[in-house]
Amino acid sequence: MRPLLRRASRKSPRDRVVTLIGKPGCHLCDAAREVVAAVCEETGAAWEEWDITADEELHRLYWEQIPVVLVDGEQHDFWRVDAGRLRSALGA
Image (cartoon, rainbow, N blue to C red; front, top):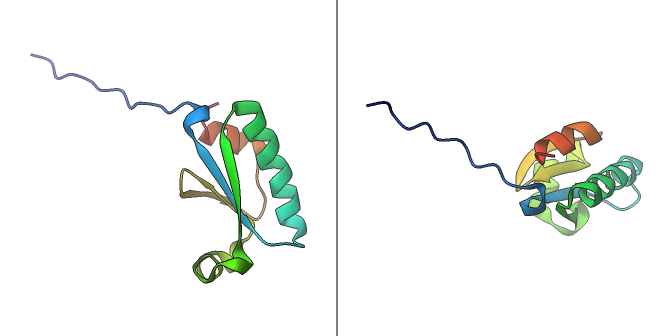
């Protein structure tokens, strides 16, 4: 008897959440926001933004990397966000 091969279930981009962690007045954060917003609009993924200056834990974890992009809570990118990589991470 052959073992059953399971395919990993792939989430639809519409089932994914992108989180942008940044701070006000950060030019890299502004550029990342544009990329994240455009890719999420195109793919249907939800996105949210967290301010690193309003949260001590975020500040401790990510201060030297902002902007940081998470996909479903896992770090995807930092500093510069590539639209193609983000689309790929979302399964689009």
